[in-house]
Amino acid sequence: MAISYNGLWKLLIDNNMNKTDLMNKVKLSSSTIAKMSKGEPVSMQVLEKICESLDCDFGDLIHYEKNQNE
Image 1 (cartoon, rainbow, N blue to C red):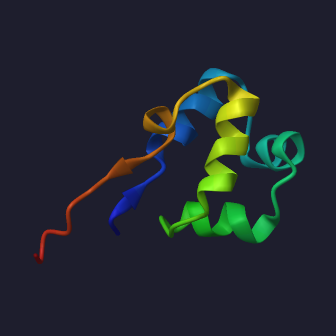
Image 2: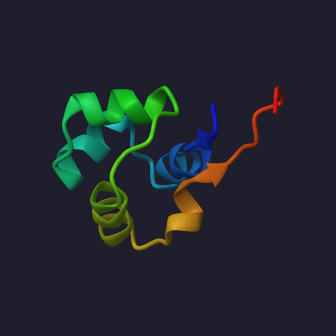
């Protein structure tokens, strides 16, 4: 897994929100949340909508993790 959304999950906790709250506030599909939960890439538009809604920056949401096998 190269993409980590741990920053987003921590931000949700800080804002007393869960994934369903995020889904409803930003109008995301459950499949998008599922992708993010698995560390899969999502579009920049999705990240932009989240940043706008939570008043944060991309760096607050995601982190690149280099694979140990490389």
